[in-house]
Every structure is written in structure tokens, then in C-alpha cells.
Image (tube, helix red, strand yellow):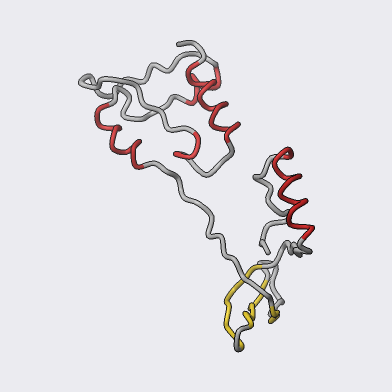
Length: 141
């Protein structure tokens, strides 16, 4: 169940096929545009309280299992640890990025290296996004 309009939009097409094949063999039901609001137990049976971001929905549904995915948060601890020692203090010029030229931001004359936050340090994304970020930033080095 997801409040999104589609199921697993972040899963790339090649990865989606084996996942869907496995889940459909188990007769898993996918529900989009609904939100899990609470879960209670009735004996050993999980009862889900289901709502919608679009309003007017308050359902109770029994399930065999409820698995909750709270999403992910950026893995950015290393970025923030290294930021004070960088020449650019982690800053990126969006104008230079769009123009496809090397980054030249200099905010710390005592810095030892340039630092850029890409991939999952920005937000949970797929590998292709991280590779593309790195390519755009470093193609001229």
C-alpha cells in the first residue's frame, strides 16, 4: 500500500520484473493512492486502518501481514564531517554545473580538497542518479 499514484516508481525496469514475478506468484495485492494510518490486532489478525490523502476514506481491512517501510534518509554524515576541511565547504555552483564546466567555488583557503554531495548523500535515489551526478561534476578532471 502506498499513497503514491504508482507502486515502486524508484525501482528500475530491469529490477522490477523479477520482484513483481516473485510477489505475484505469492498473490500479493498492491494498493496505490491509499495510506496506512494505524494497525491494531484482533487476536492474531492485523487490522489496518486505511485512509487517503484525497480525503473521505476511513476503512478497516484485515491482512495476513503488515510490513512497514518508512523510507530512507540521506547517508550524509561523512559529508558533514568532511565539509569544514574542504576548499568549497561543500558548496556547488549550479551555474557551472549546468554549463558543464569545472567547479571553482572557493570558500576556505585552508581547505585540502573539493567536496560535493551526490547520490544517497542527497536523497535516496538509484545508482544511475549517483553516477550521473558524479559524471556531471567530475567529467573534466
